[in-house]
Amino acid sequence: MFKRKKVRKFNFVYGKSSPKVKKIHRKNRKSGSRIRRITSSIGRLVRLTIFLLILISIIYAIFFSKYFLSKNIKVIANEAGDPLIQAQIPEKINSALNQNLPLLNTNNLEEKINSAFPSINNVQVSKDYPNTIVVKYEEFPLISNLALKTPNINKSYILNSMGFAVKEDLKKNTLPLITMYQDNPINKDEAVIDAHKLKYILDAVLHFEDKFSLNITEITYKKTARELHLRTEKDFVIWIDTQQSYDAQFKKLKKALIKLDIYSEALEYIDLRIAGGSGDKIIYKRK
Image (cartoon, rainbow, N blue to C red):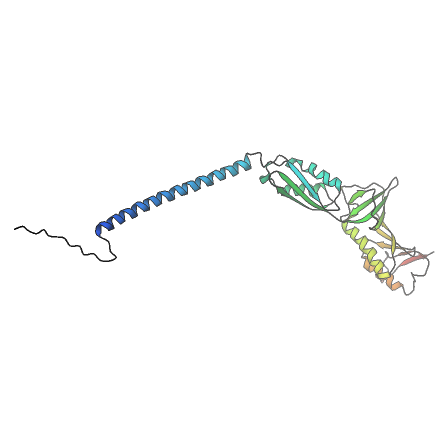
């Protein structure tokens, strides 16, 4: 008789794999993980290479390429800007041309322009890539006409708020006129009238007109004597000491109106400069 072969029986459990299948799966997982690691490393290497190439290109463009060399200076002024200054600014900062624009120090250029042009109030230097320097500026406002009288010449100017004569042989009818006497011509590199003193003069005129309802027709500033002479529409002159408060001097005149009728009397001048014992002394002369 023949012996029966034993048949192996496998008990399959739903949801579970055989040991051989599990072994194959483990090998596949290890292989896939290794491939992913290699792929990730290659990706990082590629990204690093691209980054380095970009960085090298930027460094080359900034430090070695001529692409970012400054070639132009563009000047933008406000409406009241002096065309002469607008034309001179590029000459004052022409050393900035053919320089590396990204590395250019704009603060130094702003200081250079401010030093060269006292009439400029605000200046801003910026960069317009790839190769242009942009200068934007505003000048101090024009606030007064000036008639300068010396023994040899009579000249007219327009003063800005800092007291500099920025326009010569010109007059702006909408601005007040100050007449000034001195021995020598002006130095355009210096303020003709100190900014604080110029403000004092113009404020004094407005204060007088408001306080006494009389218009001032002529303003004379005696710089050496430190006096201000204001001619009124009644044709008499008020003398003021510019070293003292104009308000305090006008208060003396206000108190004197009880005895002195400045609106109807024919007067030549009223001197408010001298302080008496009470501080209210004035000197005047009738015509």
